[in-house]
Length: 220
Length: 232
Image (cartoon, rainbow over all chains, first blue to last red; front, side, top):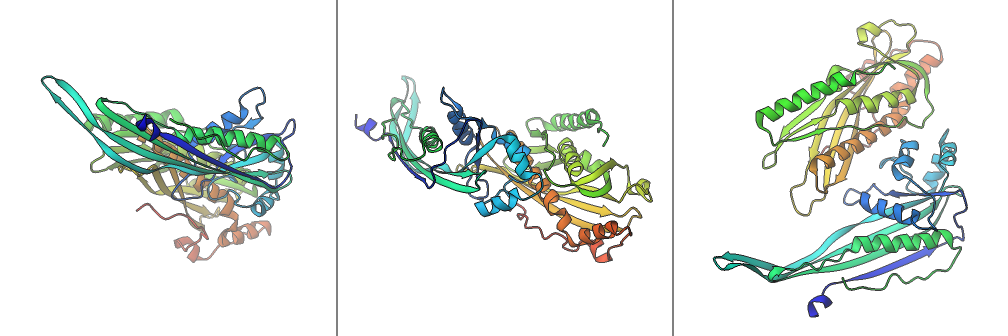
């Protein structure tokens, strides 16, 4: 039981919404990764996970494919050209054909995902040996992953930032070995995806007021 | 623009990759394949001849990395797939031309644009903490007047990185595509801002052929381009 206690997830989500805008019928949302950083970049799978999550279910939102959006808007949403602020977005929309193309996509909200999942700590060790009588392992290994992401929502129609949701999910995994190794793995990135998706859905559909506490800590 | 004989190119690539395999299978082979969008920009009011040299069309990069493997990366088809829609979007009219000599004096052309891939570098991480495959490449864009005079030689670089998941070859391909898209974005958004290009366009608008000074022809830092540096 003490081993299980050492394995778990802690999650914190902090939404901040500064307008009461909500997504309307026929309006689309697109989820894009911020790619300007040299040291990190939101993983493609993570961005896809949020896109799929927002579109899922009977109350699914109309989500535009990220790749298709970047292609239709090429070259204006590449790492070196993507608008970094709503002022940049204003200038971009003034370029010939750009505002019309955005309208054609039906996209009103852009969700910029920034962050990454990193291994922040690890330790312990497992030793394995084999002999005439058999083989086996002994020991304990553990590692901790941290998924930190920001999802910033822009309203392209009104050219303003709607707010940001910050998510920080830490997951500690352990692998005890008594003859055979037993991995007890937590997946903070998957948890961060679910949490951010839930928060984004609330953000885009509720004018104001939604629970600020993230999903409860869980044992992996 | 007329379609390129992609099948012939692909056979060449396969022949090279086959040769690499015969020389010692186990290397890493990547054929970069992608479709590239036409840029969403206002085309310049010029008619351009487009030269895609054989070296660009058949570009294959090989590098034997110590403690890794022999890498063979074929970029030829992707070069064509990127440049054709790019130039079609940038100029009012484009036409393939075989060479500068053949296009010289063609009264229907305002200029000729030639692209070469000068540099290609890539890095596949080996350390446990490194997560990204990186690709850096540099094209050399040369614009000529119909009389053969050089308007500008413009180096344009692109950088791409891609998360290394299970398959390094796939990650190299994705990073190369990002780098090519970046280069295409720079070409399409910065071309008309180059001083020599402005002078040349001004001359065309005024109905006169303007020969830009020789400094433009020998690699003056034409690009006010803030491109990433090559990989270390």
